[in-house]
Length: 238
Image 1: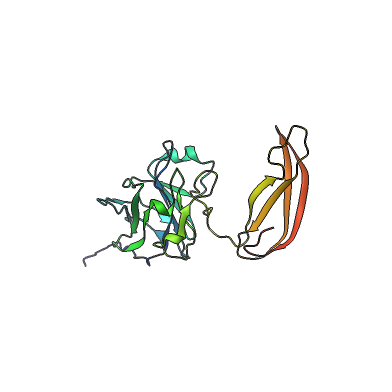
Image 2: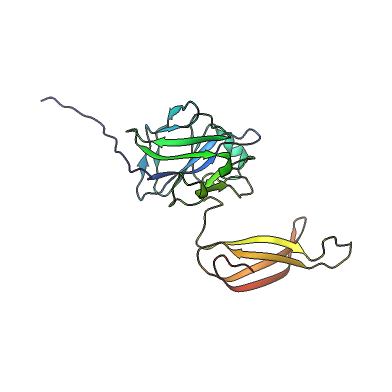
């Protein structure tokens, strides 16, 4: 009549959670942080998972109890001051200490409760992530160890914690690659012509693209010119 009870934690497939962004060289007191993304179709309990650096004397730190929902981001940061550096972070935040990340070269390793490596990346400064910009993963489908799959964030806030990376190719995506005037040094009162270069950086042909030029004076905003692009194929510019 003896009764024995035990709690068993499941093991998850390597790659079910991806390291998606690393802030290893922040500026102005922003804390270091690491962004994870659950690519699977089910929630994952990351209780008793660990995070560690790679060089020179790796330090492994246990993560706090947390269920990472399917298809969602998690930002692991050393302290809550991260909110002071971003207008909004739409994902969950975990305040958790981890090893200091070297700026020249280092890495991040995520292991589950069974000590199975779920994902890892070994970077150096030639990959990107300098001058306060995060190191962003370009594609979740490509390998974490592939240098060409990482680069510096292009976001105006220098990083994208808790949301899709600025470098990730989207199905539909149009970019303004250049804005210039024909007159390099216009005189006061001289009329000038503005030219904008538009590129389709998405995966499919863009249709009915609208381009508008605004004049902004204080709180007043006025459209002074506009144009329509009927179709623009991927990687084409106009």
